Length: 180
Ligand SMILES: [Zn+2]
View 1: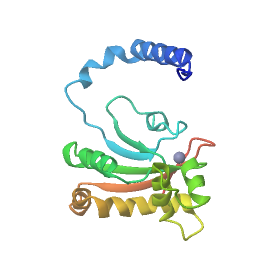
View 2: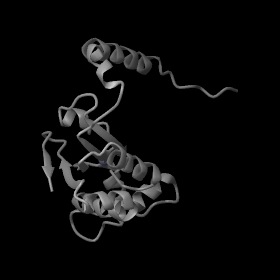
View 3: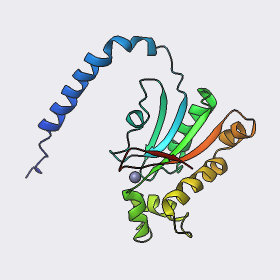
């Protein structure tokens, strides 16, 4: 028997209609971005749907280079490599690590160690910051250190003065970004 497939017709319709609205609003202005990008910041933040960087910083197309994963962790070569690309090839001067309140990845990490799955790897990476009483901010601060340890190219950019790394917390409750 064939497995019952999820009915995604409504969701797909929302994507198509959303894209049409995007083209109506921004379509006239997109051509100037085709030849290249010059974002002013690279942001490592959580994949959480309530944390959309372009909305939070009122930024447009081409302004932010965004890398997202659960728990905003600088973990794995795809994340580190993407951050390095922004720093070494696009010469972005600011790298922001943006955690957020009510983070599910942080909460999951507080319940116990990882279980050997890929989600467990994320949990274990986050748990490395545990020890104090402010896991949310400690994770952001530790990820800043991890970026420097795991990426010689980014460490070099900081050393030379070409890059600043900044930590911050986004507050879901009122939209405030608290710079650490
Ligand atoms: Zn989160």
